[in-house]
Length: 329
Figure (cartoon, rainbow, N blue to C red):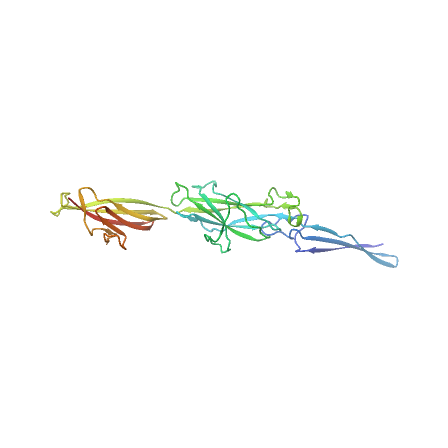
């Protein structure tokens, strides 16, 4: 008697890698057959006996594919993000590289070895409109201590922004890094760790090669500015020389030099009229351009109470000079 076994397999879903291997070899993309898929298998035996032939069919074996827990985190900031008086915005992506729907807990750590300074994490934000740009008032700010992604399907990603402020003492051009870690809410651990009944469709959830937790670093750079204010004076007396006698005019020059890669905002140069002198009306200038003394549309005011010149926003590498004069009584 000759007997032939011919297996037939029907997969209710997407065909993929071996169930025995649990698809552990490909953490970068959603792995193999979707979680909860039923893999059904029957076999047929055909035979001959005497002048006749026949066949028999085995019972059907059904296996439900377990959920594999895997995640990938990547930094999308191609250059260090700039931190000024406003927070730096660091951009990451979190991708579900498992084979079932999963949400991921998020944690930001600004204390990374090698940092010149440790920034302060202001907030974690989800890119709600998917445009890859932080939009205040539009994107979703996550609750401190409970930050998590929404449930992501296999191969689905979400962009995450971390807003980081500079600490006191940070100096211009110093750099730092912040680590974003994403961990599967179902659980994490060594590859192969199983969570009974926690997978999609009631099957088990099995930790994949990523340990169901991944992280990535993004960098920021401090962009700050400093200022030095240098005051000098020149004297012209009534005799055409430089003696500080009554009636002599003292012209003060105030040089505001801004250095660094950042900028200063709301900058004012203010000075008082020294005792024993009187302000010379119409003497106020900014960068050699005359200013009126009254409170009007130009940048300065001057009078018996002193001078006040508004410089506003001034970038590093810039020097602005204010000049005014007084007469010795």
